[in-house]
Image (cartoon, rainbow, N blue to C red; front, top):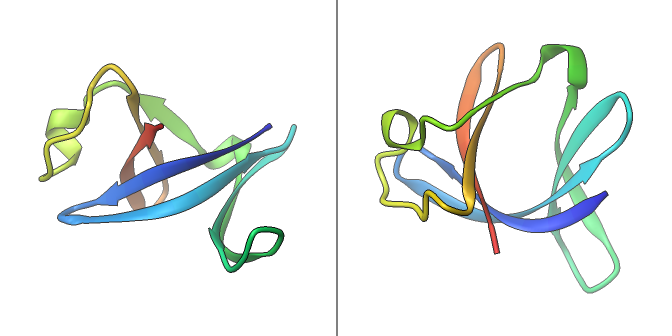
Length: 81
């Protein structure tokens, strides 16, 4: 699966693409309509999700379309378009 999202860490929000595979989540930045730059590769066994967006993000996000994802050193809010 693949989707374009807004990824918020602290006060910074960036446009990113998420690619979900059976064993990993890939976060990439769009370079052009058909190419991407790899930003993160997270093994699914290290990834967790939650709905506590207010406690993670310092920016107001749409809670109806947002989830929190985290892995050992980072927590961020993913907002689907």
